[in-house]
Length: 111
Image (cartoon, rainbow, N blue to C red):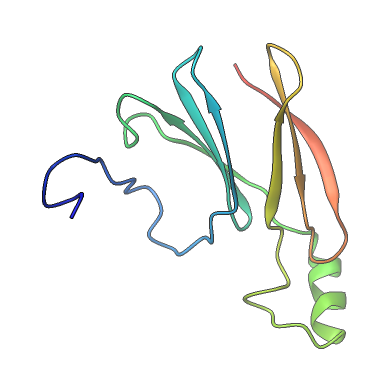
């Protein structure tokens, strides 16, 4: 219904089915961060499809292999699902992912 009424703009940058998990709205700078499977997206709030920035952040290959050896599904469980996007300061965001059952965290500098 939203598409038919032209009252929304779909995000076209991800046709891979990346299983979006978390969002962080930065109204001050007009940005939206989205955490997904093995990716973090930085979108422009005015036009979600303009100047999309994407960070590829997969789990380490050895952690994925350990995950598969433990009997987990390679496509739906053995990846780095980004679960936390938290403002740290004016220039950085704190991010955490599942890391194929070996959690990892870090900081993203928002240039």
